[in-house]
Image (cartoon, rainbow, N blue to C red; front, top):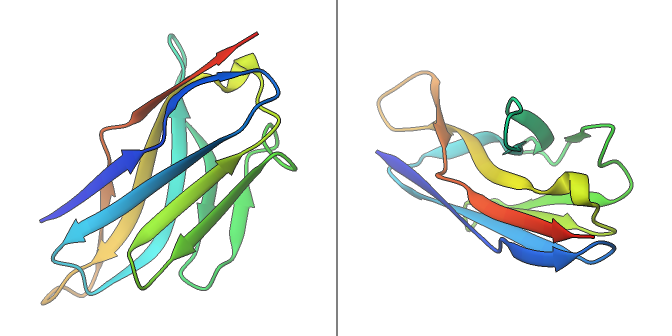
Length: 121
C-alpha cells in the first residue's frame, strides 16, 4: 500500500505565499505523474498542477505564473509553491500520484487526505 501525506496548508493573507509538500511512502518502485488538486466548498475537485517524472509540468490557467510545482524523485515528494495568493485559491488541496509498485505492470492512482488552505482578503 501507498500513503500520500500533505503538509503546509494554513491561513495566508491575499498576496501572500504558502508552500505545500506531499510525501509518498509505502511499497513504491517508481512514481509517474504527481499532481495537486483542490476542492473549494460547493465546487468540483479541479487540477491545479501536475508534473511528470521527467519534470514536465502542467498548470491550470487560474494559477499560471503564480504557482510552481516541483518534485524530488529521490524523496518521493512533490511540492507546490503558491505565490500572490487570492481568496479564490482557498480550498482543500489534495496530492495525487500514479505509483508503480512491485509485481504489477501498471501504475495505481493514490490520493492524499488533503490540507486546508485559507486565504483572507
